[in-house]
Image (tube, rainbow, N blue to C red; front, side):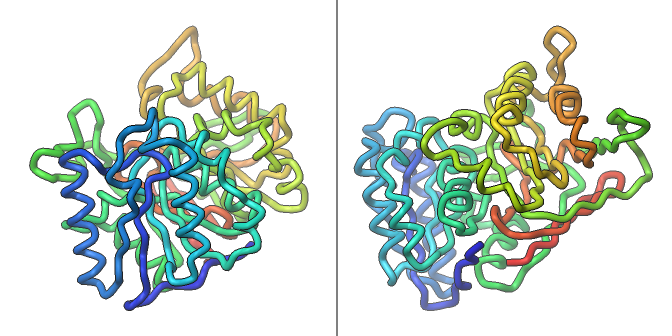
Length: 347
């Protein structure tokens, strides 16, 4: 696995929109604020043209142009890192025009993005043997920086190897994003981890018992991964053959049934054959939902209990803030105890 070089003051960071852009307010002002934050930190910043476009469907612009800018930035040796402008819905159409063979031969650089950007973060790891960060997008880097953004920059700068979970999270039903006043989120709900271990042949939730796992971090948004499964971008079965994998998964639009079907699909495709454990983020749509006896928990642990590995659920990953930035493709040790979690990465 290729870990990109650390960035340093004087280096150039590019903003690009392979998924959605920052064309409309308040996202445009937030993007400019993020640029100023990084410039003040000592970096040069290039804002790609796609960041100002919104003529696409589910993404900023037509997929060919979005892919071309992404490729041009990645292959430009003067650019040391790329941060995605936002999430979205149809970045899968963008990567249809990305030449991953060229990216595999290119000098690795940091790519940072979450949600729909799984299309790039995950494929960089599995197709190009290049680590990338599943973490914040451009508007998140505006003032005030939270621990999430500081940790992300710290990873890129080589100053941070370990990230920690949070005591509370921002409940989406209370409107954690207040874009008008540029607040990021209110941490108003205590975080409770649900940890599962195999006990006497079945998965059972455990308390007051430490959980530890070691392996390569791999995963992202389950909605996207299920979509990639079985396409020409799916070389996962070959990739995981000789590696112990810690699967990091979170869901956005999927309800509990959708999560269970997606887990079944990836399982049947052979993705989980060599797993060391699972870290499951707080789901957005499926949170506190039950359909015909299926909820966000048994949608995961029941089909996966046959592997006999630990499962940590409701971790600080995904669409409900805050979330820990994780280096997909890095070897890591993950430990959890009661409601605490930490990830120590080799990156």
